[in-house]
Length: 250
Image 1: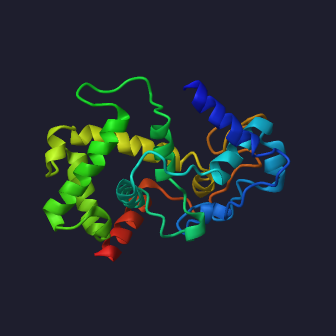
Image 2 (image 1 turned 90 degrees about the vertical axis):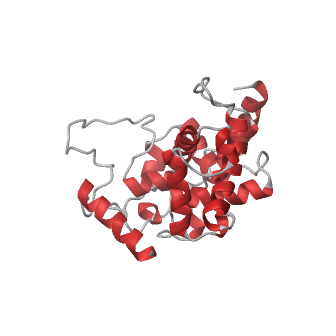
Image 3 (image 1 turned 135 degrees about the vertical axis):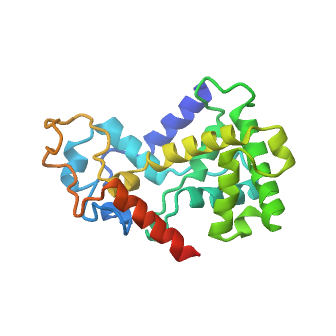
């Protein structure tokens, strides 16, 4: 992380005073299919006792200081937002509580932050996203004759499936390995989605355990302040519900 990046983060965190009230996070993340519909991840006691001042600042920063777009062009933003909406559909939660994903990807690329490594044959993350979003548009035109964001959900899924499988149409994919780019994209999307307390409420995650931590560490023995499942969902039930949602789109 550069000194400029660090200073930018410090200024953002300084704007989120610890004595401010907790952010507005809906019960269960506002997700209709959450098995934790009554879970309040920022309840008053939890906000006061679970997290220390630096942790509260970070949580407030994630919710209240969504960064502006500075790396991507307007056309690239439209494409990336549509892609993120298909990777993490959020139609079951109110629009005002949708978790922003694309702005945080833009922020990472704007500051040229990375993991310190990349696969052989892959360009820098900044260049990879330029080629990758262009390639998604080329694949959308080749398969359906329209821009990606103009396609319906099923068509968008087909484009993304071809990218993930490593065989999408388009000249850009002769330069950029499609399956590697899809892995990079998914890694970023997953990271940004589950960095948000709305996602924590959705999956019953208690958030950073700082400073209170956890006491009961055995299976089936949650601490008193942790989430409780209203209806347990095993893997078969999760897949079944996902398939039902897919079929309803057809």
